[in-house]
Image (cartoon, rainbow, N blue to C red; front, top):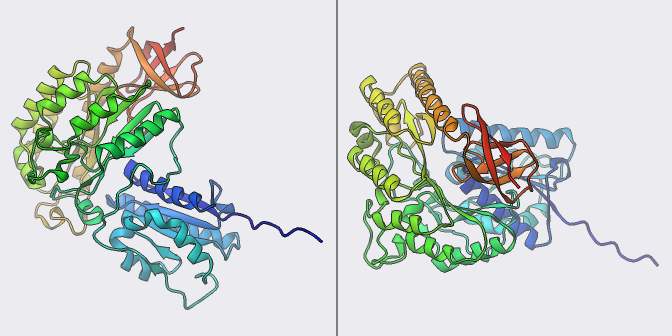
Amino acid sequence: MTAPTTPAPIRIGMISLGCAKNLVDAEVMLGDATSRGMEVTANADEADVLVVNTCAFIDSAKEESIEAILDAHKRRGLRKKAGQKLIVSGCMAQRFSKDLAAGLPEVDAFIGLDQVNRLGEIVEGLLAGPSPLSNEDWRPLDLVTRNSVFIPDFDTPRFRLTPSHTAYVKIAEGCNHPCSFCVIPRMRGRHRSRTIASVAAEARNLVAEGVKEINLISQDTTYFGMDQWEERANATQPVDSTRGPTLALLLRELQKIEGEFWIRLLYTHPAHWSDELIRTIAECDKVARYIDMPLQHIHEEMLLGMRRETTRRHIEELITRMRAGIPGLALRTTFIVGFPGETEEHFESLLEFIGNVRFERLGIFTYSREDGSRAAKMKGQIPAKTKQARFKKAMRLQQRIAREIAEAQIGRTLRVLVEKEGVARSESDAPDVDTQVLLTGAAARGEFANVRITGASVYDLVGEPLE
């Protein structure tokens, strides 16, 4: 008598698009699936269920998401894998699930931001049902709920998709800012923070696992904790720990964790910076001397039209205080060119500002007209040709600045985190979006190393590892 065979575990494939915040959602989905005994596979051919985690931030991201969905469906048809299920998640599903369900009958189910911690349960239900490849009357399941409220906790299962030495920690979800070019609050809901204890517990676990870099993310990391205050914080409230939980208090709690690691701040908003936060970063040596602070523009009329809740004077004074208060600080920012109504005068003002401030890291986006945003209805939409010309001009300026900043590093010794053989990142470089240090000798992957900078290109540095 032969022993009964154990059924093979359900295999889940994941295609995650967009930002780091979306990547954390993908990790939570896979964490839930693996907690129910399922396996993760990087090979779509092997997957019983394939999840496309979409982005809908700008038009090009939506186009990429649609292409990924259709390609996934096409591939399962070519493989004659009629039983494979296709799930669409992420921001595009959250915002457009009804329209997508009508236009993409190839999909088995659409799930939203409040379903990311239920993927395993959803998968089990789908595998027990019919498929669009075998049932002409099939209609996709729309499981999306509006007004998202979910936020992960320290004990939420996660299957990390980043290299073992770096991790993203989502400290809050949603956004309260009314930026006219953006629809993220409509997709991800109001700002809601985790507790300091929850974030600290997750960080301790990650450090214990060998993580050397903790990247703090949310739509607005500087607003962290303010939604928990007894007295409501306004849209431009500076960080003030006398009123309740804040990012400053969180950083001081993370500083207490034993071990050698970086804490990196991403997605901060200029409206909420305070001298207390600047002082906290200066006093916490585990916090990287690196600040990501998207400014979007500098001309007063553009800032007003964008509803950025700040002014040029505030931004200029803030940058001066930040650089004076945090020695060695690398500032990263992003700007939008071609916003409705942007004149040559507005654009030249932006170029002048970029030239004067000399940001260590800078990105430029051309304005994308997002349906449902206030800016989409504005007069004075800029032709694509003009937007592209302004993009190129701004990037040429930044390339010159970046080259000069890079060349000034030659001869210095920098502490770097080794990403893989021959490649590392300095404290001034966030994963995926910034520059690299190309190593001329061996150094242990996933560990810190000291390197002497021997060369530079437009962006990247060349470094020799030291004993």
